[in-house]
Every structure is written in structure tokens, then in C-alpha cells.
Length: 228
Image (cartoon, rainbow, N blue to C red; front, side, top):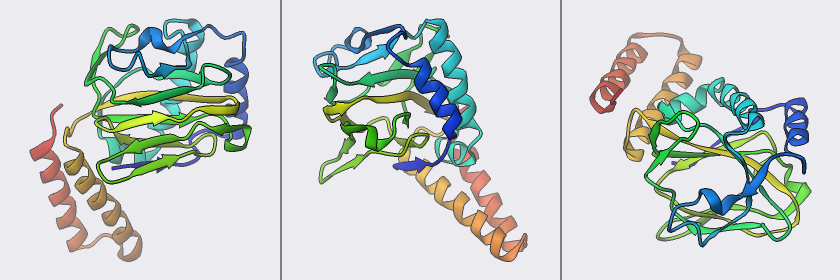
């Protein structure tokens, strides 16, 4: 399932984050944190994840996404890898097709997180750079996204994906992974669809016997599929 989360950060928050992520920030070569398969594809800059700035900005991103009820409904988070930050511009301007590692180890928290769901939070406005689309491939097609600053996309961690070359300007983003309580993307999609339709039914008809029964179905499915 691919899901866009809109307006997680307001204009003032975005301006402050972009100012913090200027040339003075502790940027390092992105390839230094890539695994064996991805290292040949990764050509960007990444904020040093153990820096004081990274730790401060991580909390702002986490607060923003965790305040969005769609994030919880879609991801059903059990563990969240600490948000990272990257920059694409100049000669360090792309990340070729790759699949993220299944288990990632956080230097900051020492946790191991299974990458069921990937999340990218766009921090630069689309008009501020050319290229830089986040492109996800499947067996039949590709989907490219270039979202307004402050919006995010959730997509399966199993996806083959890339960031297309940035040919003008700078693309700033935060990215992280979620270990879901429900490992299966198909099961998470069913639960999300049921949750969203229950919400619409309540808005249209209020609470009634049918919504109560369907709520029980949702929780029984979650109980069947979830690990905590």
C-alpha cells in the first residue's frame, strides 16, 4: 500500500528545519551508511545521525507523524527507526534502484528494526528543484512522487525504489522505517480500508449496531494478525 500523508509540518516548521539543514549542518557522504547492495547506487549527502542537530530534528519529525491518525492506522507501528535526513544536489544528486535492508540497526537507540514500512517526509517544495522524484517499481509499472513540502509517503519496505537525479536546486527530505505490529502489507491494507470505512459510516450514521459489530471484526482481525 502506498499512502500520502498531507500537511504534517506547517510553513514555519519547514522554514526552521530547512535553515538548520543548510551548508553548516554536519553532512556526510550518504554511501557511508549504505549496505553492500545499495552502496553502489547511493550518491547523496546524509546528516550525521549521531549529531546533536539530527537528534533534535528527529523528535520534530516523530512528533509530526505520530500526531497524524492516518499514520497510525496505516502503519500500525511497533518500532520506529530514528528519522534520518538527506540532501540531493550538485554532484551528490541521486539514489539508484535499490531495496532497503530487511533489518536495520540504529546507532542511536541500538535497536534493530524490521523495515515493514518505509516513510519519506518531503522538506523542499517541488518548485525548488528539478528531478528528485521518489520512484517505486513493481513488476508491471512504476509510480513517481514529488510531494509538497511537509507531506509524506508511506510505502512497503519490500519495494524496489529510487530517487531520480536532481538536476537543479536541492531536495531535502527525512526518511525512516517502521516495524509494524502487522507484518503483512496485504493484511495492513485490509485493516486500513476497514478502519477508514468505519470512520465514514460513523460520520454518516453515527454509532449503531452495525458499526459496533464491524469494530469488533476490526479488532478481532488485529488480534489475530498483530505481534507486540
